[in-house]
Image (cartoon, rainbow, N blue to C red):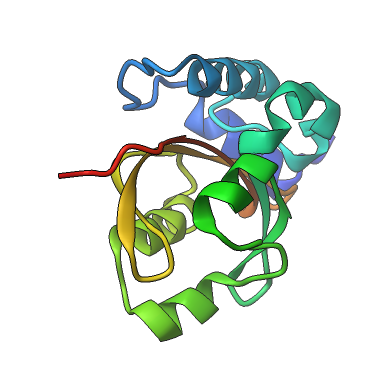
Length: 166
């Protein structure tokens, strides 16, 4: 039997622990645990394992993004809490649009790293709200592989603290 490249990569990389700190926010911990179950013993889950119903209880705090053939990231599904905290609906927006307007920042870099390195990313710090920093965000970016072993989707869970940062 001939294995597909993506399956070889999944097996070769093996199941490892990610350098994700203790997630004190229950929402992020629960999303992370569900994502880990989808890995089924491999390091990363395949897109085919992704079922939006698995994450329905967290839908208001989730972004589902597609990695486009050119490497750009397009936000496809954006939860209501994220829209309310950001003051705008990011659905259909692309990472390249934000980069052109804002330049590079920790949020953009983290999304790009998740795609290029094909590994989860965690962020705890200020949230950039369209050029205005005022929220604390705890964000977990979780990649899903296609059959070729490349990052195809990102599942992003975000918890915003509406208190102003000092």
